[in-house]
Length: 504
Ligand SMILES: Cc1ncc(COP(=O)(O)O)c(C=O)c1O
Image (tube, rainbow, N blue to C red; front, side):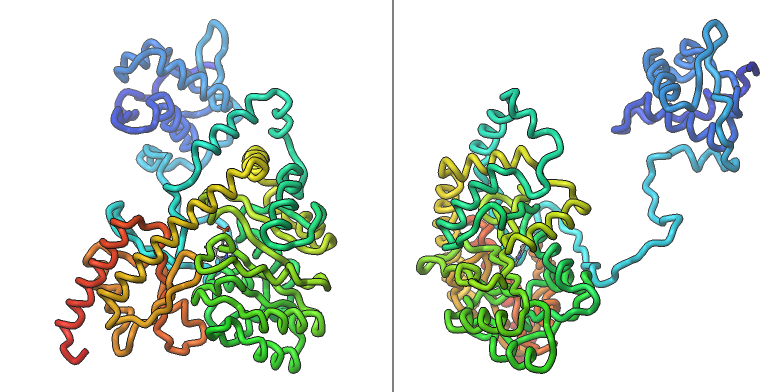
C-alpha cells in the first residue's frame, strides 16, 4: 500500500468557520465526498496531520479528530510507521463533480425509491413568523404547565438507583404504577368501574383513536361521525380503511335517530363521539341521546369510540359523566389523556376498553411504538397519587373559565354584528358562525395582513358542504392581554371588510 500524496487538499477543501457544523466534521464530510467520488482512490496516501493542518490553517487537533472519525467509520486506515491511507476495500461510486459533495449535509428532497403517499393527510402549511397571532381550534396554554412539580418529581425518581429499572424495556400496557393510579383517578372522577386490565397507556388521545380505528375499521368497515367532526379523527378513520357516514349534529349533540336509521339499513362497526363537548361545535351530548346511543350499540353490536379529550374543562356545572360509565355491555372504547390538562408535548393518554380489546390494542401498539416514556409515566403516577394533577386541573379550569368569559364578552361587544355564537359550557374553543354574506376567505386573507393567522382550514369544518360558515376559535391559550389583542385585531379586519364592501 503506497502512493504519494498527490491530491491538492489545500485548494479543494473549503471549511466554513461560521457554520454550526464543527470544523473536524466538515473536513470529514469533504474527505468522504472525495473518496466516494473516486477523487481519492483506495490506498491513496493522506497527508500527515501536521502538514494538512498547516495547509488548511486549522489546529492540528482538528485534523487528528477528523482522521480518528474517518478511521472509526472505516473510510481510512492508519498503518504504523507508514502513515494514513484511504481504505483499500471501499466500493467506488461513480465520479461526480467535487462541487456536488462540497456540502454533504444539504437536505435531499426526493427519495430514490417508491413509497405510498397519502394525499388525504396533507395539510396546508402556513408560514408564520414568531410574532404572528395564531388562531388554533382550542389548545391549552403550555405556559401554565406545572414544570416545577414535574421536574422535581422526575429528578427524584431518576436519582434513586432502584428506579433505573424504568430505563429498560417495560410493560407494553404502560407503567404499572400509572395504570394503578388511573384506576383510582378515573373511577373517582368519571364514575368508571375499571381495573388495571382495562387500561392501556398511550401517547395522548390521538394514539388511542388510531389504535381503535385499526382494530375496528379495516376493509371498508363503516364508522359514523358527526357531520361536523374532529378533522384528525376523520383522517385517522380514512387511513385505517374505514368508510365514514355522517349523522347531523344539533344543539343536543349527534342525532342518534339518524344513527339508528343508518343501522337499520346497513351494518356499522363504530360510532365516534366527542360526547362531552362535540368537536368542533362544543355542544354536550344530551342524557337522552347518550342512553339511546348505548342502547343502539348493544342492539346493533357496534363500538362507540368515546373521545373525552377535554373532560376536565366544564365550567357551568359538574362535568357530565362519560358514556362509558353507563356501559354495561362492553361497547365503549374510552379515550382520554393529560395533554390538555398538563401540556400537549407531554404525551400521555389512556385507552380504556374491555380486557380483550385492550390486549389486542397493546399488541398493536407494540409494533408502532414499543412503549411510552416510562419515567414520565411514573412521574405522572406520583402526581396523581399526591393530588398534584387534580390541583393543577382545578387551577387551569378557573383560568380558562375566566378567559372564556372575557373572550365571549369582547366577541359579543366588538364583533357581535358579524358572528353568531353560543358561550361554550366547557372546553377551550368557541364555535362561531360568520353571518352571511361575510365570507371566511376574506376574513382570513385580511387577518393575515394584520399578522393574525388562522392555522386551520375553515373548509374542513364543513365536511358535508352544508355551508354552515362555522369556525372553531380557541381562546384557552391566550392570556387576557392577548385576548384583547385578538379581538381588537379582528375588529380592524371587519371594519376594513365593511368599508371595502358597503353592500355588507
Ligand atoms: C377532539 C380531539 N381528540 C383528540 C385530540 C388529540 O389529543 P392528544 O394531544 O391527547 O393526542 C385532540 C387534540 O386537539 C382533539 O381536539
